[in-house]
Length: 314
Image 1 (cartoon, helix red, strand yellow):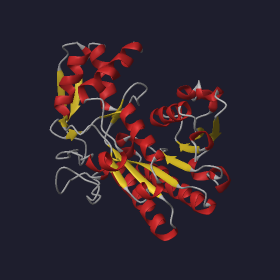
Image 2 (cartoon, one colour):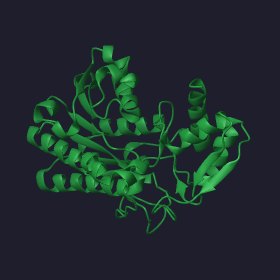
Image 3 (cartoon, helix red, strand yellow):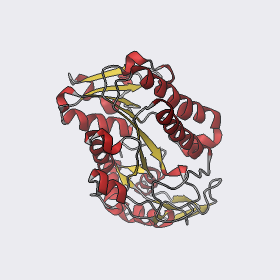
């Protein structure tokens, strides 16, 4: 199928990742339908895409998605979620409703159409909270350590169950923290850069836990490689997408301070529940071999590029 004949449905299209993927697909000639609960007039990250003839915006809750919404799409990319770990501590039931029940609603709509050749799911490094070995590969069991990680792990298991029971052709694309221009402002990297650029202390929760930061352009490129890959090569597979670089949270705080060029103090508070001992050391070897994916942006470069955008908001 030629790209200009292919149409992709993106759930959560008005968010950071969804809008970035929509923009990249439209640039490559794909037709895109974006589904989101954000009112069209408030979908600021899709402002230019709204006028693109190849783009359709579907203002709708994921829980109410119907087979008719899925029909006509060869690929579905599932990004809609309650994405914030802190909110999951305060609202675990809401988080499960969004991330698990929403995923099941989408799976049922895809199952009933029979037209989708790939259903791609954005999984989370939080699904593996206490790794049994390193580097973490795609065969590692899911061991979530907080309510958010549980909700994403349960959603990933639902994809596996619907694939085995009904043949829904799912692909799991797992990342750690994704950063870059237009990133979510509740993520620690944004908060640290914002505070440092305003001369305020950087507040670190814990410090010895680790993260693999991924730059949005690298992640979008990996998703597109999976969309373009032969179905038989990727359906039923899981891939870790990241920088391949493991940093402690306290080292990332130092990099943020250096990039911001403001010598603000770093203050330490306690770990979030379940967070102490968490490590993100993912292997991207499978993605390299199967998709041809290699990260192009280092962790420091990703933080620096994000900082340029944060400065533009001051």
